[in-house]
Length: 76
Image (tube, rainbow, N blue to C red; front, side, top):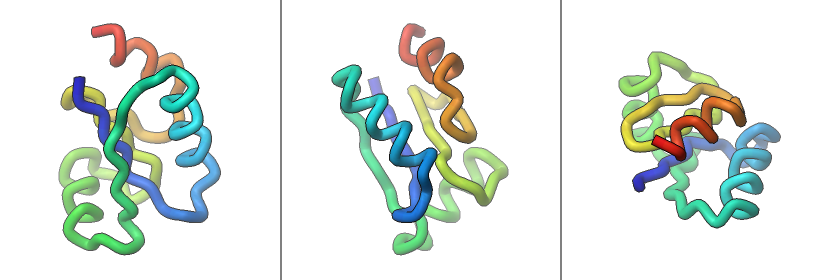
């Protein structure tokens, strides 16, 4: 399973999502889009969104910390 989260340091919902993944032992890759322009562009291409968090679970894109959508994507 591949989980990627696009974040910024000041994003509270990003921290909630990362805490959720850690609590549930879900490994993830984090990209700070405030410092990595290439990953910021990748996030926008994938989601059409400029806001964070954007979470990619096996190519299923979730915008924001939508826990039910995350749980559903993790089960698939």
